[in-house]
Image (cartoon, rainbow, N blue to C red):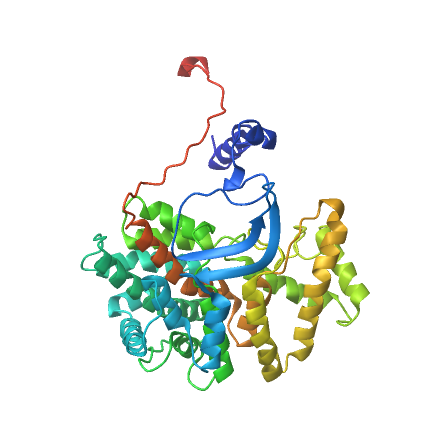
Length: 450
């Protein structure tokens, strides 16, 4: 049998062997996707790291949507962001300290922590050369491979003591920007024939500015670029223990595998278009709308095109308006407003006022068109943070190839904080949910009778 014929034969068999009717899940009381019937998440654990609030429960048990709130170690993220902005300073390093330790740092602690990160940011020569030799079109895969390789350079990689976990966590938080920037420059060189730049991080700069430096070089970014990238990193640093990538990290951590293997699992999860890859889809969708809508101020034309997207007649024919909806938030995503406020200032600086105005119009009309399309079946939903993050990254001159890696660059903080917590429960247990087999039994048939 030819290889192509064999693959076709195996592929055809999947149609029957992997098709489990949707009704069977409900009949057997299985929480499909670890979701309850009201779409709330099934409680799978307890955490002190972060909290995502999008609804409350009425006395009858039904869900009541409330304005979205996000907490890091009990602190409302909006208060964290506003506090940093009032002092006119950057806050990602402070956020990382908070999530790892559980408390806000003093001025001296923050400066020591910042210095530790910056001193750890450079890669060893061998690691740099390996990144330069990696081939591939997706930086998320290169990031995962590079993280696994860091195991080799760790003198005590399998030690899961608290001190060692903190050391490894800071190492990863520091190394992610460097790996991503180097990986992009290699991709740019290999795929586009552009000059290869390997810029070293500067100990005196922040994580956000170092990333822009390594990506774009001195003088090619503004103070506002730094501030809004820092804000995006703060807002993406954690999102509770239930999001897919963090749960992946907690599941693998519960086995007591090494930190690098566990974080690579999180990267693999985040890469998916239904998770961290969503901002790439939003950016592509907005470009498509800008190309196909002639009058960006015409509400009827915008509505008509959005309806075409929902009817699978436009953009990627998926029937999805990307950037709408969230697993938890129903009324509002608290991160969206914070990012939008600064995105408006960014649009003015970059001369993108018309593009931003269209973005706001799409935000307004998308929800109206969605509710009209869904009718009585429409559940309350909202614009999520992905809707503006792609616009922000593009406006500050970052390529689409690093949109999802930027998400990972922020979320590594939450991943490591949850890993540390998972490994330090007083009564920890390996995560091992059950699956019900619904395949009927069959007899083994000897080879000569098949």
